[in-house]
Amino acid sequence: MRQTTMAKPADVTRTWYVVDGEGQTLGRLATTCAHVLRGKHKPTYTPNVDCGDYVIVINADKVDMTGNKLNTEKYYNHSGYFGGMRVRTAKEMKEKYPVEWVERAVKGMLPHTKLGDVMRGHLFVYAGSEHPHAAQKPVELKVKG
Figure 1 (tube, rainbow, N blue to C red):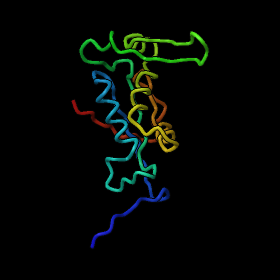
Figure 2: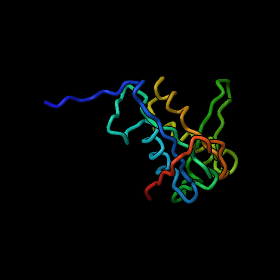
Figure 3: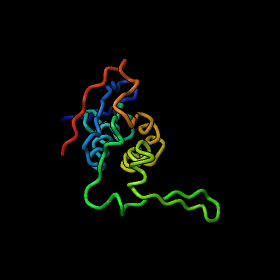
């Protein structure tokens, strides 16, 4: 009988991936990043262990959305005070806050638990084409589509 191997945190080996967001669709980019951050691309994937890799996203300001979603998609924040609701369109998020725009898309696709918080810490998003992680020797990751 075969036995399922469960990964242990000490046995996890992590690699660094860099994703170029230029010309990519936000949803496809976010699903690929979330897949790698969770570790689902590895045969040793274990749901209760952080076995994912690090992901660097560059050119976040050049990520697009299809159709008319830039004008119709809305992002909500509330300060907790009366009248503290802030609403932004996707176009405004892309122009003023491209890093937060991509981070929020990936955050929605990761578990909303303590383990998900650790996975979110392995995501690095930059608006330009430069990043300070050259010492980690990141491997290029292709996004389908």
